[in-house]
Length: 238
Image (cartoon, rainbow, N blue to C red; front, side, top):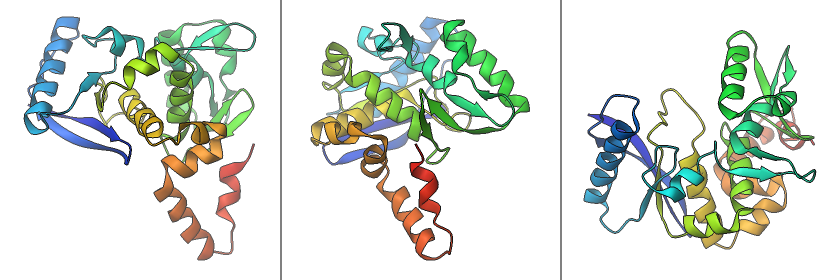
């Protein structure tokens, strides 16, 4: 047995819950899909009215495969297209090696992820710089979710399909080993869209932070008022 998070969403917000299920070991697509089926069955036993979708390259649904960060594409003003995963990895800024955006022109998503992971083993990640827009490391999922939700919103057909669901999983995501999750990003999109906050949240990164991470801002404000240092300034550097 194993536990993985399932992300739920409605017009009031989004949340996650760890669901216990039978895990099938192995790297083949068939084994992954057995695990996905088990996870969904256990989730639906507890919440039978849910419409759940696996978001990964192993998803049994074409929609879930297309929504994978490795497949969801962003078209730049120049006309070039990059996957969400490529932009995420390329936007990482390290203390000694700097920003990795130059890798975009040379490598695909999987190769970029391996290269940046190697850099991370010996260098400290200090932030993100996405084509001139700077993001802090906290909240930990801030930049990834902002990037993913923006990319999904620009894909009209896919985002319309995503809105048919109110729960999302990613069989590859283990919160003990990873931080960012494409299933969570989908849940955030559904929440923002169904609550009519999407346009406002995507108008700028500060609005996104305020709407999606209200508890984080409350914590920061408390620290500001209890300290002589204005910690909030570092969050909104552009």
